[in-house]
Image (cartoon, rainbow over all chains, first blue to last red; front, side, top):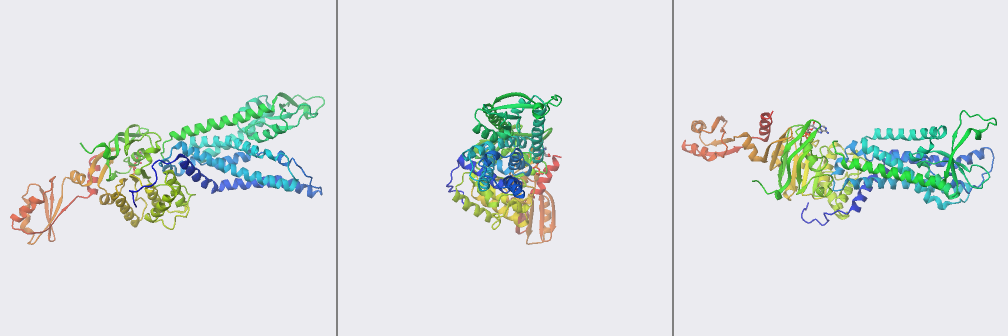
Length: 323
Length: 315
Ligand SMILES: Nc1ncnc2c1ncn2[C@@H]1O[C@H](COP(=O)(O)OP(=O)(O)OP(=O)(O)O)[C@@H](O)[C@H]1O
Ligand SMILES: [Mg+2]
């Protein structure tokens, strides 16, 4: 060993250090069995989505019709998958280091804790981005083979971006929990409870009460509503959920019907009308432009991400390593 | 006056750390000179690991200051860790990384360029005896191999100060000897080594200076030899004379500082309670009594004895 001629500098470059953390984290992510499991499940669901109609039509000897809108109507990774991707990617990226004690050698390297956190988040972004890129490619190729050439494929980058934004709401919730509890099991259990509460709770609130407005400000599925397009004969162009999990679906609807409105409804349990029928059971609450709904969902998602990552950073920066 | 502050690798001033009501480190004043191999001793729970964790920025002190390589340790200060290599007590590394991958990533964090990392990692893996296993996942390493990897990563950046928290814990006897050799080698190249250990024989063989702490308080600090003679207060002399030993026993016994004397075979064992070196007086007495000295050895008390005395006294 020669301690005299040290050719490298004592001033490590920040970008180089950041890349080191990203590599540290990426190598972990891609070797996580849970992550690979969720990726396989996501591919299985996409496969099912692609082929089930084909199989059903075959069984009843019906021809397979080409559908240029297959991709557009199926884009947007479902809320559960978004959550699972977030969970398996970052559930132990802070708490796991504390639990296993690997945080000790890491934090004693000449790299700031802020940079470590940024690197971990960047690695989560790259990992999930790569997974979504694979999934969308698979869906587009498969959809084109089965249902013929597809419309609006230029929306794909925006769709992936929307799904990433939705996922990162959960990523930031899980990171904040991990930083707070320093316990992976506790983090996962609380995160799953929040996810279920947001999904079950939002359905109940949205369907049975008139307080759907508050769902606009919570993560997850959000309030359910109907899209009304001006001048279109049918009252409703389709149903939509407006939470942070559904940003991609809203982006597509906004692209297809830029001037549409979203009408929130609730189910009237008592008010039986003489004519009967479903529509009479629905009470329209209020309407707002789809553009506003989309803009608000994006803002709320961004606010959650910024606030929760700041919280995770604040706690992590000050954490003492007791082991 | 002691050495100038510039010559210190580690200095703590009234360093204090509490866990709830327990005072783990109590107004500790450490001074570790540059270029020394400084042993940090103390019984279990004395506060060694706690002190070290403060020095490397893992814990925040409740009082006092710590200065490492001239930089005040406070908050998250990556700069102050640039020239320090640290091996934690029972280090744990990410199980999903290969040995060389981890060292390569750590090297990048130190700002080492690729070529430098390659040659350095290769040499370190050889040095710690992990050659041939660098492509295995750390999860497949044994406890001792993780310990060896811990030593390698502490030396990775060619640090000026190496802090080792019980480096021999969990190593096989060969590993312990190798660690001692590594410590001596890096010290020869001017690196300051600060190590905590329970292996007093190891400390005695390798350290130039020691600090002994107990219940968070420093009981003794300084050059190893000084501390042993100061605490034990006495030395043992072995003398062999050409004549029958009985002849000189009577003469030596009369010296005021001799506390005990007995014959072991052909040798006379003289216990003294003097503070300085009494070999001249003893040899004069023997010669005056008509003896011929053919062998004389000043046997230091062992560190173990010193350590036990010190700890017992403060119980
Ligand atoms: N995380 C913690 N929470 C509460 N008390 C702690 C914690 N870590 C250490 N202590 C206490 O602080 C004291 C000093 O512990 P420390 O680990 O520094 O001792 P040590 O000298 O390294 O001991 P050992 O030789 O066993 O490694 C002990 O009484 C211990 O119980
Ligand atoms: Mg200890």
